[in-house]
Amino acid sequence: TACGGGSSTSPSTSSGSSDSGAPKGTINVGSAYETTDYSPITTSALGMGANWQVLEGLYRFDMSDYSVTPALAAGDPVKVSDTKYEITLRDGAKFSDGTDVKAADVVSSYERTTDEKSIYRQFFTFVDSVEAKDDKTVTVKTTIANFSLLKERLSIVRVVPASSSQDEMKKQPVGSGPWMYESISDNTLDLVPNKNYNGATPAKDDKLHYDVLKDPTARLTAQQDGTTLAMEMVPADAVDQL
Image (cartoon, rainbow, N blue to C red; front, side, top):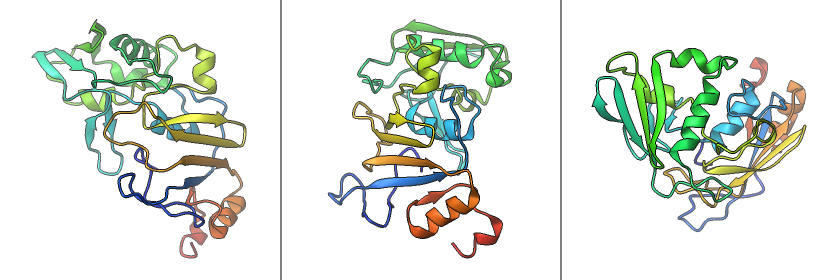
């Protein structure tokens, strides 16, 4: 579905870029998974996939070509020394609730991501510390000189308000990405554009809707009927048919 929305919608609507004046629509997704955990460190396929649209890291990792670009960061890390870097936040970055994104939010999100119970902890053994220099600047110190994968690893840390409780994050986290959660139930997710988003990949459609369809026959039927635009885990024997 991609952070930027999409140029296609369900058959009942048409779509185009937000600058073209063309009608927008809903991107309907048939998910093969279910979860009750949407926290930033969830290991659920559904939770992670949906959070990628809602929660930003300092950097964005594009899984289609492995490129890394700034997300919450205004640009590349500034090298202070071989083991110290400073990263400035994007001007005007806000969470979907309207509050400003601050360096303290990044620090608390990093601490949560690297908690001893987190599966992501293993990816940050090279980090000595992550601190807020001021509201707009994050200082990262490493144990390895000139560590080449700094941006890639920092993209794992999805930033939420430092004030968020564990229960709030698990049920419906607040982020600074192009989409925001409108509602989450056992069987459906609805995401709408985040009006406070000011980054490079704004949402270009009206809604992103997920139906939890664990049964492969149900997902296949929905895709054939045009109820869904995107389908996870297509059965191998149905690929040519679709």
